[in-house]
Image 1 (cartoon, rainbow over the protein chains, first blue to last red):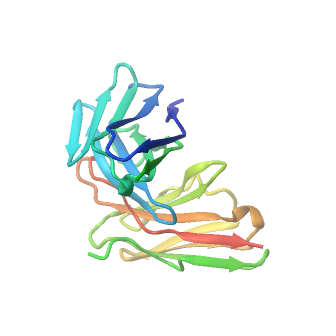
Image 2 (tube, chains in turn red, yellow):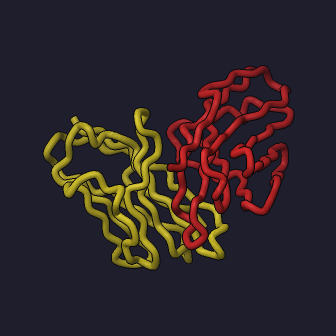
Image 3 (cartoon, rainbow over the protein chains, first blue to last red):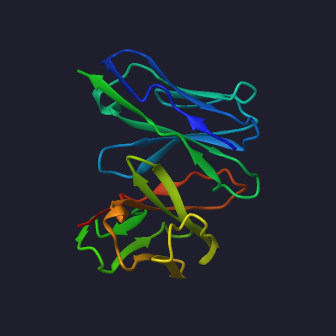
Length: 114
Length: 115
């Protein structure tokens, strides 16, 4: 059974630091992996989607990597800002016939201190 | 596009009452999902539709829960009768199927409190 784990559950860093959020999964037979951001009282926003054939995706200060063989993905945030404070969730897609067999991590709550 | 629109944003009701949550997906999206989020269990997929047809409702917790999608621009999630343990944030999300690599777009959610 596929399980997705995000450690740590919470992280607090000073503004300006580069940081890495971790996501691990138990079964490497995934189709893709997505990173989402959730602000308090809001819905989830998809940040990056990495296909199983890809190693990384970049969007602005965000870079997501994928290592299927080791069951790991990381979300790198460069030059963190207070506006990056949110909960970050990863989700793995298990099947090739549907985008929507998503298994979710519990999220990492990130606080960027001014 | 205004994104996925959910209503109401907040709902407070008493145990035993019927609750109806509404969702308008992004125009042109052919998949629609209902999720529930709680602190204890995180995000749970309740049901999803493809082209207005329910595909997988295995996540619907009980017969008290039902969902419909009468057309491509509207879906409802109904709880009847509601119970305190149904208190959660309910999200609707939509996506466009293109080789399974399209992103998922979420609404802002409905915060449901059952007293």
